[in-house]
Length: 613
Image 1 (tube, rainbow, N blue to C red):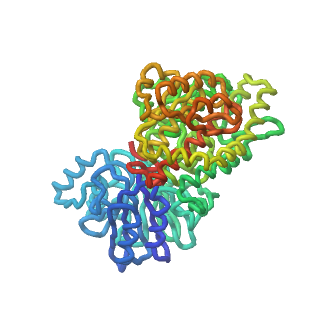
Image 2 (cartoon, rainbow, N blue to C red):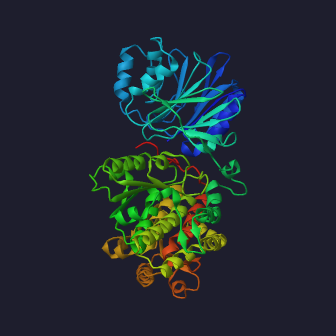
């Protein structure tokens, strides 16, 4: 859950590494550090707090050299502090390491090394790695071999980058298991290493991605990849199309606000090349879905975490209603521990923005072991979840920097809708008239989302009124029940306001006891098949003194009579309504957090990509 950047070439590494870390600060921001090979020795600068503190430190104590590595941290072992910040250096001061992951046998290794006389200078698990490498270097091996042997002693999942003054012409990077990704980028007489694509997009779009148990030896001219057993690997080179400008805030105050407004474009891109409106057909070629496979599927298990899991809950309704295939939604962190019933007629469908979420990758691995077909819906090109799947759907949203996911929520909703239509078509459960109508409805989505965004100024006064609340209750039914969960999550993530979400039909089974004038209720009540039921729940909340906000369809005359505030959305085909109803909830959470003066893009205790369990 950390950001890693490395550079080797002919330029000064320091500004390149710092700029790369800035683009990765969403992955961790409780401390940061940089190591540069300067005049033959390794010099380190590191500090607790955000990257700006490190930048100030480097400004006062400059570093200059042609090879360097850096790290921005989200703490797992050891409190956020300067001494626990990466990079970590060995006792010989000749080897330095940055790391993403958790060394599960850290205590055992630490005790073993201390018995050998090793002095530890931090509380982190990472430090054992650099000392292990030094142990094997002292036996006369190369840096490559010492790193390989050290990594074999580690339990858990890891991304590791190593630099040494003994071999100043290389950087070594490795990936073990489902920890954060390792990307190597190609330049002209220079090479780049990072844990995520945005860090190096300013410099190159030619990249390779390490798979689990692979190691790369990176020089300024090229890269050599092998397994941890030393067997050569010929990695596939990818040409990344993302524009570095897309990682800048531009006219917006925060990345989150920018990304909310980018949803018109991202949804247009999601449809591009996949929808034939003339023929009423869906095409998802990377999914590798054949008619035979479509007919063979007896069950789909959608596995994901957080926001992605809420998208999966919508997907369950879509696939069951349109394609008539039973669907389970399983939180990825629980899936592999419950002895799931999976076979070759089951699809395990993982949803992940980063494609590197450790729990989701572990769930995919469990599905693979049990013979399931693996699919993924993923945003990060070349990520692990994309590579290990039998087929995938790319979200097409471009980089999402804000920790609280927005456009990477709405894109998979449309992806799941398209998947449902394609499955139904291939299984023969959808006649051509109905199929063409479902496909035609997709044409409306970018415009409908744009119309919601045009109403942003109507949401700001409500956010201003509600910015000091301490609790909130979100209610939804049917296909919009997951949107209640997602709305509550957004409020919690960035404003730190306690919010709970419930299926509205459960109100009388307990939650209604919470409703009073200090517990605002936000109800999602578009004119869909559950509309009358939602009206009843709104009435019950209102009679108990609760302040009520309702997401409602333009032209509704009943809701304004009941609600204190209304967030209007345009009329939308109900199967696609979650793409629209979530927009005001994203804006509402954003403006409350912004009005409270909070760090919207980097909320406390959270990181963008959860790459450790």
